[in-house]
Image (cartoon, rainbow, N blue to C red):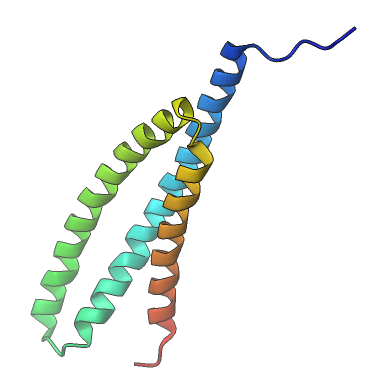
Length: 116
């Protein structure tokens, strides 16, 4: 006797659960992007030789701006992954977004390790 293949409802539920788990991974990477993006911005602006007060303002403004961008990104990624399940593009979308997020993290790490 042949085994029954999973039903369509079972496959969609599994894919939506997977998309939620991938979204959680993306949220974690977004938090790291926030931290290392802030480090990168402050380091790059610090190279310009601005005084303490201007650098402090730019640091605080970057926290606000990166926080808003992060919030919008997290909300968008939930929609992006959910619609990726419908179009059978979940893994390609996750790979693209995660690659961009990891590049930002590595850029922040690389800049923090440079002897400047």
